[in-house]
Image (cartoon, rainbow, N blue to C red; front, top):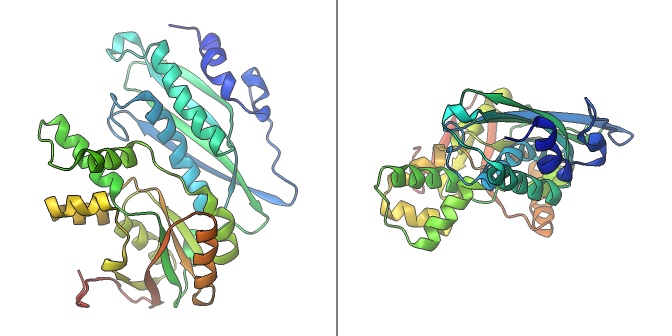
Length: 322
C-alpha cells in the first residue's frame, strides 16, 4: 500500500484546485465571490449501503460527488469546491483496494469535478478495519440572500421536476435481481440505461441560476419522489394535487412497468433520482420552463400546491387518488 502522502500525491493532487494549495497544507483557502453567501452540504456513503462494494470504482467516485452537487443545484448554488474523507479498508479486512482501484476511483471523481467546475480542495484518508466509506463536503455560492430553501412553497405554485423519475430505483432492483441470479427480461439497451442511472447520477447544476430567479422552493429528489415531495410541502404547511400521468418516466422505465406493474410504485417511491423538484409561482411558470429549455434541461409540470393544511393527493387519470 502507498503511504498516505504518496497516495494523495499520485491520485488526488492532480485533480485539486488552486484553493487546495496543492493538498500540501492542513487546510484549504476558499474565497467566495464578493457579495455572495457560502452554501455547504455533505453526504457520507458506505459500501453495501449507498453503493455495492463491487461497483466500478469510477462510478463510486462519480456518485460521491454527484449527490453533493445535486444538493447545491437545488439550493441555487454554483459549485466552488469540495473536500473528501476517504476511509479505506485495510488489507486484512478482505476488501482489496489496490492502486488500479484508486486510479479508477480518482478518475471518475476527477472527471465530474472538472465538468462541474468543482475542484477537490482538501480532505483526509484513513485505513479502517470496516467497509469502504467516504464523505464529501461541497461548497457553493449564491448571491447574498438568494439561496432557495425547501420551505418556501406557496398555494398556487406549480410543481416541476427535472429529467425522468424512477430510473435509478429500478436500476437498483435490476442489480439486486442479478445478484440473486434472477435477471429480469428487459432489452440490453433498457437495462444498461437503468443501470447507468443508478450508478451515475446526473446533478442538474445548470438549473441553479434559474431556480434563483423563479422558484419559491426546491430540493433534490434523493429519497424518492413521493416522500421528498411530502417533506417539502410539510415544511410549508401546504398540500398539493399531483397528476400521476404527468410524472415523466423514461422509455426504459415504462418498459419495466410493462414487465412488472409494481415497478411503477418503485419509480414513485424509490430513491437515487437526484433530479430537482421545484415550486414555482404560477406567474413565472412559463418563463421557468422556457429558461430550462434554453439551458438544455427537460422539466415537467406535475402538480399544483394547494392551500394550508390541504392533503397531498396523487391523482390517477380518472381523478381518483392513489
